[in-house]
Length: 137
Image (cartoon, rainbow, N blue to C red; front, side, top):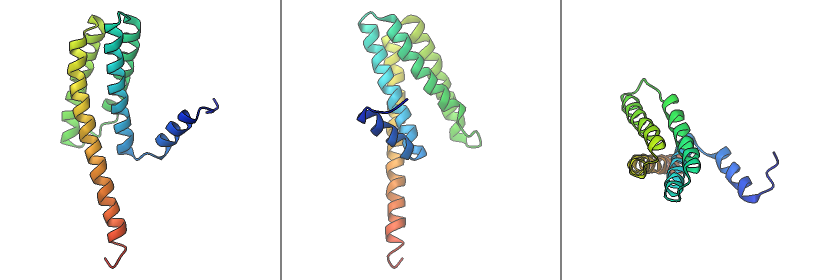
C-alpha cells in the first residue's frame, strides 16, 4: 500500500521514529479516540459502529496486557487494572453503555497522562545527560 496521503506519511514517520514510551502514549491516544467514537456511535444509535470502536479499544488493552514484564510489581498492578478495564469494555459492548465507557475513559486518560509525563521527564533527563555531560561534565 503506497502512502500517497501526506498525513498518513507523517503519521507513519511518527510511529517509525517514536521511542517505546512514545508508542505507549500513542496507543493510549488511540484508546481515548476509539472510546470517544464508541460513545458517539451509541448516542447516534449506531450499535455496529460502537461495537467496532470498542473492539479496537479491547485489542489495544490486550496488547498492553500481553507486553507487561511481570518481573516488576507495577506490572502485576497494571495487569489487574487492564483486566478490569477489559471486562468493563466487554460489558459496555454488550449493553452499549456510555457510563461504563466513561469509566474506562477516565482510567485510560489517567494512564495516558502518567505515561506522557514519564516520557517528558525521560526526554529531559536524556537531554541533560547528552548536552550537560558533554560540556565539561
